[in-house]
Amino acid sequence: MSRWLLALWGCLLIPAAWSHGVEGKDATYLESVSGVHFIPLMYLGAKHMITGYDHLLFLAGVVFFLYRLRDVALFATLFAIGHSCTLLFGALAGIHANAFLVDAIIGLSVVYKALENIGAFRRLGIRIDARAAVAGFGLAHGFGLATKLQDLTLSKDGLVGNIMAFNLGVELGQIAALTIILLALQLWRRSRAFNELAYTFNVLIMMAGMILFGYQIAGSLLSA
Amino acid sequence: MSLPTLISPFEADPPSAKRLLKSIAWAAVGAAIVLVTIVLPAEFGVDPTKIGGALGLTAMNAPKRTLVAEDVVGGNDNYTEGAIPGPGQPIPLPNPAVVQVKSADASVKTFFVRLEVDQKTEIKVLLDKAQVILYSWKVEGGDVYSDFHGHEPNSGQAFVRYEEQQSGRAGRGSLVAPFAGEHGWYWLNLADNPVTITLEVRGYYRDTVDYGILE
Image 1: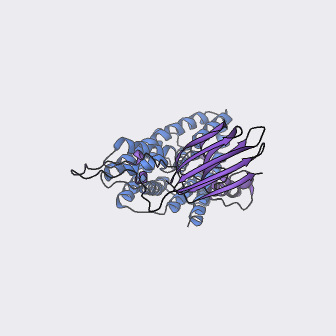
Image 2 (image 1 turned 120 degrees about the horizontal axis):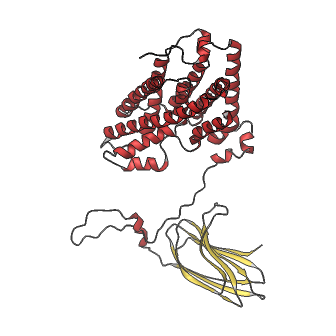
C-alpha cells in the first residue's frame, strides 16, 4: 500500500522533467500577442504552477501535517497572498530580480518547511510563526513567478490585465495541485505506513530542496 | 480562526538532536551526490566524478549542430502584409534572392570521369546560399548509382539529398543552394565494364571540387 502511494507521489513530482518556467512556444506566443488575452495567460499561470516542481514541493511540505480543511485553506491563502503581492508588484514595477537567487531562496523555503515538519526548530527551541513563514516565502515564490513572466517581452498594451490573468491562473493551478496533493496524502494517512514514513519523507523533501538550492547556486556561478 | 500551534507531530515531540543532525547530514550528502553526479553534468556539463559522462548526461550539454535549409526560391513564406503601393509603384519583393544581378558571365565547367568496375567518385560545387546552377550529366557504357546532395563544411555525416537514382544514365536540372556549402554528385559504377561520366555545370558558383576516385 505504502509503496503504491509513494509511486503516486512520484507521479506528482515527475512533471519536473517536463518544463519549468515559461518556455518554447508559450514564450513565442506571449511575445507575439498584444492586448489582453485573459484565458491564454490564465492557462499559462496555471500551467506554470502545476508543472513547477519547486512550488509543488513547498506546498506539499506546507500541507503535509495539516488535517483540517480550514487549516489548509488558511495556509494556501497565506501563500497565495504572499506570492500574488510580489508577482503583481514585481511584474508591474518591472523589478528584475536575479532568477537564480530567487530560485535558490525557493529551494531554501522547501528545506525550511521540511526542517519545521521534522521538529528541528522546536528541538532548537526556536519558535517561528508558521503563518508568517509561509506568507514570507510566498513573497519569494512570487518574485520567482514575476521574474519568469518578465523574461518574456510582454506587450505594454494590456500588460496589467495579462498579469492579473496570469496571477489568477497561478491561484487556480495552486488549487488544482493542492487538491491532488491532499487526496494523495489523505489516502496515505489511512495506512500505518504514514506515521512510519512521514519523517523519512520530510527528510527526502529537505534533500530535494537542497538539490534545488545547489542547482540554482551552481547555475548562478556557472552561467555568469 | 483557530490555528494549530503545533503543526507536525514531530514538533509536539521533537526527535533527539542526534537523530535530527543525522537526518540533515543524510539529506545534505544525498543532495550533494545527486547534484554532483546527475544535476550538474546534465544541466551544466560540469562532471568532476565522470559519472554523469558515463550515464550519458553530459551529452545533453553538447552544442547543438543545426543545419538551416531555407526556402530561397519561392519566398512566399517571407511575404509580409503591407500597404498597397501607389499607382506605378512596385510591391516589394518578398524574397530578393529570386533576382541576382551580376557583373560577370556565369561560369561553365565540364568534367569527364572514367570509372572502372565498382569504382566511385564525387564532384562538388561550392555555392553560397541562394547561388544558382544548371547541371547536366550523362553516362556512357552502363548504369550508375547517383546521389545528388549537399552539406555544410564541417557538418560531418549530415547532408540533404536532392535526388537519388538507384540506377540511371543521366541527370539534369537546376539548384538554388538552400545554404552555403558543398553541393554535388556521388556516382558508383554498377556496370560490369568501365563507364565514362560527363558532367556540365553552368551558373554562379565559387568553385568546384573533383574528389577523384574514392577509396
